[in-house]
Length: 240
Image (cartoon, rainbow, N blue to C red):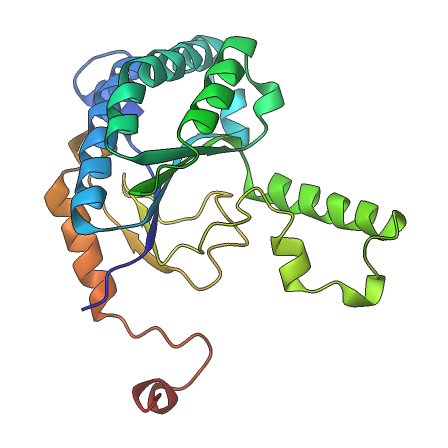
């Protein structure tokens, strides 16, 4: 059975996991870090080529400042702690989102890590931070308009491909499988363009409790689905 080449995950439920244990919300975010490691290692073992994780959305800036500050500090801490191991495992890290909104120390880590892991090819780990799907589309449209104004592109030549080439996700395969933990069943402004034909899978498991077996279960559900991309079942089943 075919494996998904690209898995995208909304890691939801960290705060609720902590609250159920009478812990501060940031404790849930810390607990969720270990599941990132578990998921990365599972994807490497399975031969998944790309894993995209929604770490912090453009809307998350509206959360309590204490939580936002704690998260930003946690990002730097985790990158410093985990980088060498990820690099040794052949993981390429790529970050998408409005990095100009991030603190200089975090931007510095991101720029350095992207450069150092650029040629790693065992797994591409994409971290969406300060990211919003609508923002990404708006920015792609602005870049397209500017290309027309600069004479680099004719208006009549604008296609889906020209828009896709100006998204933060340019060069990445579209996700085959989308997973959201925590029980919510919505996309929440994540990869709006890229998820057009992605298979969606939702679980009530909170992210800090997400195990390798849960990832395998999602993949097994994916493998049972018929991906038609607008065609009929007969066309898909009789394709050469």
